[in-house]
Amino acid sequence: MKSLEIDIGTTTISAVVVDLHTGEVIKLLYYKNNVIR
Image (cartoon, rainbow, N blue to C red; front, side, top):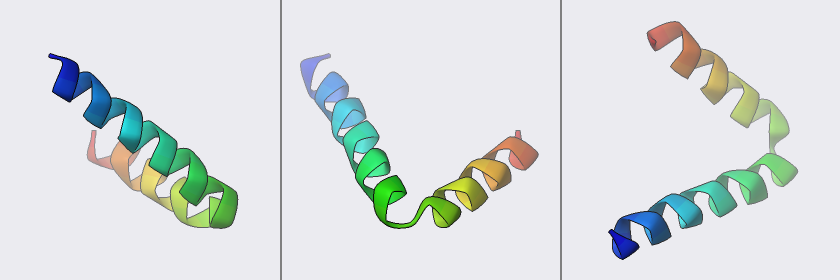
Protein backbone atom coordinates (compact mmCIF):
# COMPACT_ATOMS: atom_id res chain seq x y z
CA MET A 1 0.00 0.00 0.00
CA LYS A 2 2.80 2.40 0.84
CA SER A 3 4.39 2.03 -2.60
CA LEU A 4 1.01 2.71 -4.21
CA GLU A 5 0.52 5.82 -2.08
CA ILE A 6 4.02 7.04 -3.01
CA ASP A 7 3.26 6.51 -6.72
CA ILE A 8 0.03 8.49 -6.42
CA GLY A 9 1.82 11.28 -4.55
CA THR A 10 4.62 11.43 -7.11
CA THR A 11 2.12 11.51 -9.95
CA THR A 12 0.24 14.36 -8.29
CA ILE A 13 3.44 16.33 -7.69
CA SER A 14 4.55 15.74 -11.28
CA ALA A 15 1.16 16.88 -12.56
CA VAL A 16 1.42 20.07 -10.51
CA VAL A 17 4.96 20.77 -11.74
CA VAL A 18 3.95 20.18 -15.36
CA ASP A 19 0.88 22.35 -14.80
CA LEU A 20 3.14 25.22 -13.75
CA HIS A 21 5.16 24.90 -16.97
CA THR A 22 2.45 23.95 -19.46
CA GLY A 23 -0.98 24.64 -17.99
CA GLU A 24 -2.67 24.42 -21.38
CA VAL A 25 -1.41 20.86 -21.95
CA ILE A 26 -2.79 19.78 -18.57
CA LYS A 27 -6.15 21.37 -19.40
CA LEU A 28 -6.25 19.41 -22.66
CA LEU A 29 -5.37 16.17 -20.84
CA TYR A 30 -8.10 16.76 -18.25
CA TYR A 31 -10.56 17.56 -21.05
CA LYS A 32 -9.69 14.35 -22.91
CA ASN A 33 -9.99 12.30 -19.70
CA ASN A 34 -13.43 13.76 -19.00
CA VAL A 35 -14.57 13.02 -22.55
CA ILE A 36 -13.34 9.42 -22.28
CA ARG A 37 -15.19 8.98 -19.00
